Image (tube, rainbow, N blue to C red; front, side):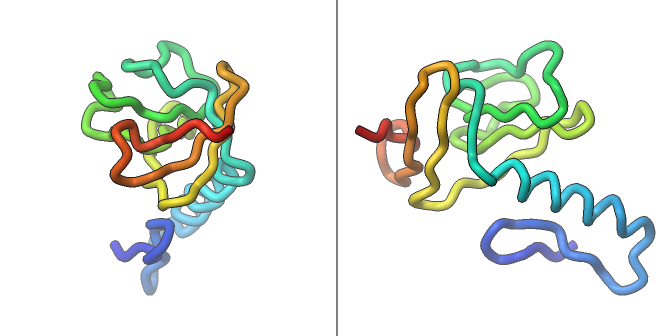
Length: 115
């Protein structure tokens, strides 16, 4: 499947079966980024009963479904984790800290607290 170059959203293919599945997933990903918020950025394991639409910044050392997704935004859609690859300059409000973070590739943690 081909994806968009900037956000990596799956594109429809000619004669695609069930195009609504691809379109709905793309809409959920766009919705998750507008505005970009996350409940937490320090959980190393996915929560046991996430709500539809819950978002988290995945920290280093994450386990379970989040393994190998460091610094990505984990987005729960219908009980399945999807991962958004951040782009330099993205800003995310982290609810449990009441702080904004900017994605800064090359920094030790990836996400840097904003003053």
